[in-house]
Image 1 (spheres, helix red, strand yellow):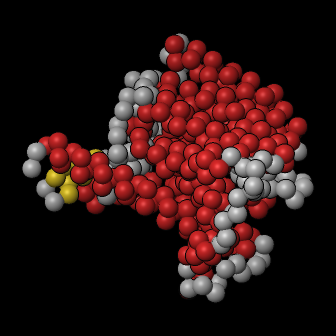
Image 2: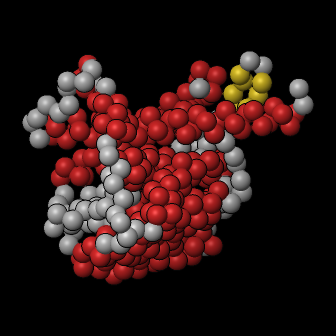
Image 3: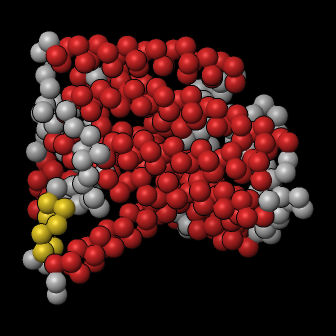
Amino acid sequence: MSDFVIFLIDAAVKAVLIIVGLVLGFAYTTWLERRFIARLQSRVGPNRAGPAGLLQPWADALKLFFKEDIMPTDADRIIYTLAPAVTSVPALIVLGVVPFGGQISLFGYQTTLGLADINVGVLYIVAVTSIAVYGVVLAGWASSNKYAMMGGLRATAQMISYELAMGLAILAPVMMAASMSMSDIIDAQQNIWFVFLQPIAAVIFYITILAETNRSPFDLPEAEQELVAGYHTEYSGMKFASFFMAEYMKMIAVSAIFSALFLGGYRFFGLENLLGGWMGPIILFVKIVASLAFMVWIRATLPRFRYDKLMAFGWKVLLPLSLANAVVTAVLIVLDIIPSFA
């Protein structure tokens, strides 16, 4: 078998595993959220479908699959149908440049636990996460509903506003590692995680990914003070499930990206080399679950922002702070006051 065929099989298997992992992760993140919030509020949560409610996500999926799919009479049928896919696909492909582990040996074949290691991985992540904005605004516009249109515009304005601060926060680990490769950034954190060297950038990035994924307290695009649900008001059945799925898959994806940029990714001070390199994915999995639990905790704790406060916080607080942090970091690296891991 030629090297090229082996490469294609290797890439195809990894791509399928990432997609299957995200879909299963989405299902059980909803279970985690419902059970964890129930515990925080002294309730039980889902416990009927399967032991401890573990089959509840499958019951919900079956219900949505058979739910009637209604389309507004005046909707743009093509764009209305494509919008959920435009929102979901970026969540599926963004993890293509995030390493899940180091090099391993599988049936005598040497491979790395990651789909692709490109030298502009950070740029790829920023570009792909920006595409989801189109799905949101197109869903609102194609629905032929003024409320949905307003919800789409508000959601788009929020996402664009917080993407600016997010991009500037990402600059900090990029400058520290002197590389836009996710592997290089993770390798630079072998001895100390960037969250300790760049705490301001880490906090800003985590806040902005909450806003990017429309999580509480930034969940205005999905449920405002009124009962209109925003850009997906006119969606039902599996099309609505696609938006729902995209949100939770993005939660998993941004948790993995945050772990790679600020928490050392799959590394944990040498423990990732245990079990022939298979300890790396386990370490990353634990960090992702911890991040997801923290997101759920925030949802159960903090009230929703008012829209003008949300926009003011993004433009007047996070953006100047992230810009100042990027400038100060650059100056300190040039003066050799803080280390660069190039």
